[in-house]
View 1 (cartoon, helix red, strand yellow):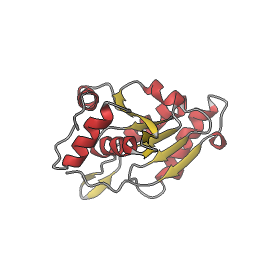
View 2 (tube, helix red, strand yellow):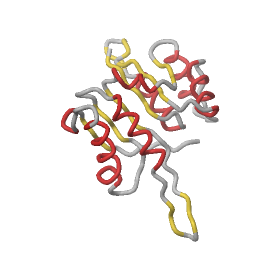
View 3 (cartoon, rainbow, N blue to C red):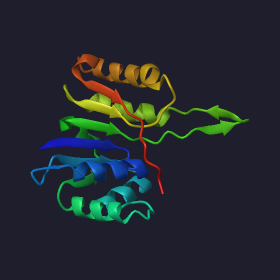
Length: 175
């Protein structure tokens, strides 16, 4: 069974983890799914909720809640251990990217996204698909994500040619 790691267990990452865990072939799960979040009080609350079969956010989507409960008994778990990325076949990045405003002008803070990408770059194995699902401004993949990954891979004597990278912004509306 292939392993999929979802980096970031906000609403979107938690829902994506559940959706991927539901994928089946011949009535058997296609993927082992591990949701990864930070070792913070908020991250641990999300991890514990998922590991206990509960969706970590308020939602009226009963199907989502039931699906997570079912999958958490079979092929879905959550952790703060970034070493989970080492043997992942697919890594989906769902790190929140909020834009704040200062004097009516957007203020972009890429530090959380950069940090998340560095963690992946230090652990990703060759031939892994890294899917950036975070909705980011145009040019972010080329100007921030790719150089950050390149640097971390180079430190490991790897290159971008050793992994697969794709961007598909999320289309989930929390709530």
